[in-house]
Length: 173
Ligand code: FES
Image (cartoon, rainbow, N blue to C red; front, top):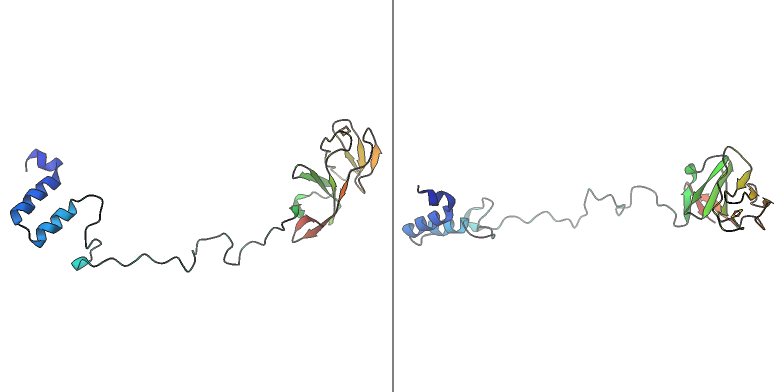
């Protein structure tokens, strides 16, 4: 085989096809050297019959874990602030950058607007059972029990937010 035939196998095949004439064998060889289109009868189907269609996904994807099948994880309530388990007993957390959620006793939750009434700094969550919420900017203090002001410069207490526990989440009531 000449060197140019090694690098141009289709040219060689075409030449062979011409030698064979216009029979069915020649058409098959030319089809194998075509462009991007699949050859007729691809997939080992004799006589050029089409291959079976791909399996339909109309019945649902068994690997779909988006919860569309009705099973899976419980839904997070739309007004959820935080999972109850993420709020330490005797302490609190700031959620959504604006709400202080505290758990002064196991299973008892309270929430306040975390913006200090003085100049709007976000207050520090209480911890280790401390009954005082403190503002880090000018040290105003508020009661964990009801958010009332203990000492200034804040002119008043923290604004309360009504919450309840639903489905394991602290939610706005
Ligand atoms: S901003 Fe909180 S005490 Fe001033």
